[in-house]
Length: 138
Image 1 (cartoon, rainbow, N blue to C red):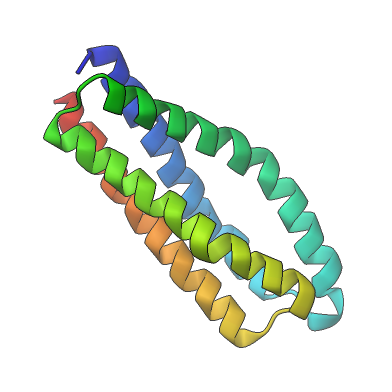
Image 2 (cartoon, helix red, strand yellow; image 1 turned 90 degrees about the vertical axis):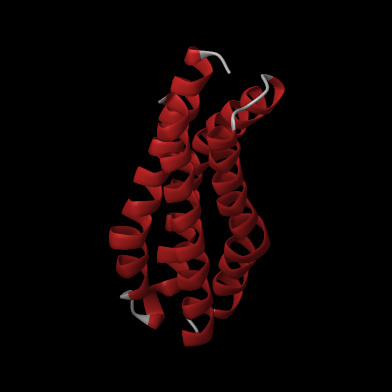
């Protein structure tokens, strides 16, 4: 695998991990503390604002992973791609639909727990990706 792709994969994976850490430690706890009567407005604002970061970040991660796969990745780079894929799948299959339900039903405790669990999976996936990319860089 080319050194420039290894750097790209590490940069995208590390940015993803940093983003996920902020969501886990700052964003979701703040969202969970919103009063039920303020929920609709707060959740709508969160969804609108976070998409400005999530969209470009996930595109960069996907591009780095695709380029890595096309270049003939090392085993460590495959671990990085797998970690990023785990985070993306958790987002697509659990977190995004849960946000949809939270938007329509409000801050139900079971939905908030589901969102936090999906967030743990995403953060672990991003951490695995970052470690794999770091090892691939050598």
